[in-house]
Image (tube, rainbow, N blue to C red; front, side):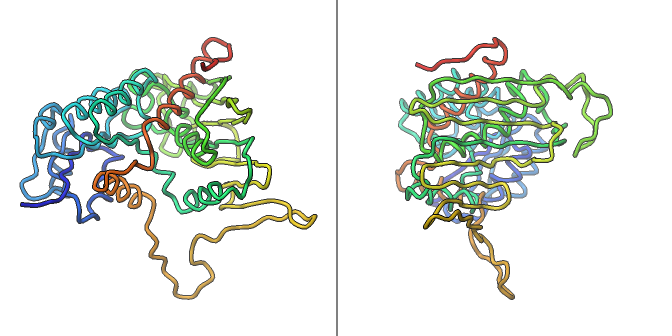
Length: 360
């Protein structure tokens, strides 16, 4: 009998192949035993490539959850099904990692949190950018208090022309939104985590459809179909926290800007600042002079040096599995992810109503 944790993958598309299964396969403490996808060929391919001996293939996720031997479920489906599948998995006594964002709506995210509390099982959300080398280093800087009180921050998720034209990315009904909920969610999560501030007071936001209806537009993945482009092409928000701190969130798939870059943040504190715009830089004042430190996170400049440091996706999966094994809190808690969803929803609501959205 194997004492490895048995994992089921629900949704065998891009993110499952690009991150989850690839990194889980490197761990000798787990085995992937079930693969589920509405397109059975994708599940079969995943099982052949990553499955343990005797692994099974499914089309209906409810059949997966009937297997009492499965310990962990990874939900890698479109946003509108995150809550349904996650809640069912928790009620079936499984630990769950759900891809970001937590859910299509804040109400669904709250239901997921309540289900996790009721079940006693662990729930985490796939905010993988926390696990990059620069993010890990900057978080240690923030925890140590080097920046002092961070009272202004910018969350960056800007693409000049990189609209995803595959899957359901352009479908508002399936996704709940465009770049704001897709990549803005990563930048906001990263920024809140660095600040350790999860108490928003008021949100003001705007979402735009300025470039989405252009025919034959320049785009990294080829022109999009304006008829299918039902989500915003860019969105921006200003968040004031209860302690007075301000966060500006900027997100786009298509925007006339040269300052692109996603899942990055700029932090301004009383004792120093930091940004991820051109590598990781720390700035401050010392002995009456201003300074800027560029943090070297690789082996550049050292002959024949090959860094063996664990990369972000592998670290994310290892720490998640260890949290289950050791019964500790996951790095990304559902409470934190819920706040991200609440702020994103407030930006969309503010854009629709033209009003500021206040939190209790």
